[in-house]
Length: 80
Image 1 (tube, rainbow, N blue to C red):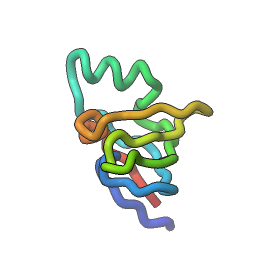
Image 2: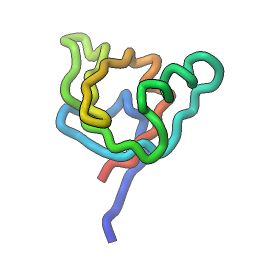
Image 3: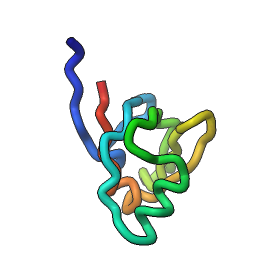
């Protein structure tokens, strides 16, 4: 059986991938995050980061999007 760790998306490194385990944001922010396809069960991969580590570029559902670290803090990912 494969061991997995749950971490916040903000702390993932370039090249890491995983599956979204939970979105901990409510209200408008939570809706916007989910509208982008960042829902539990979605597979994501970190494409890169800006020089100051904010924002982060992620690949999800065959497209690339960027998130600010304050948004990425609300997303928990199971990495293997």
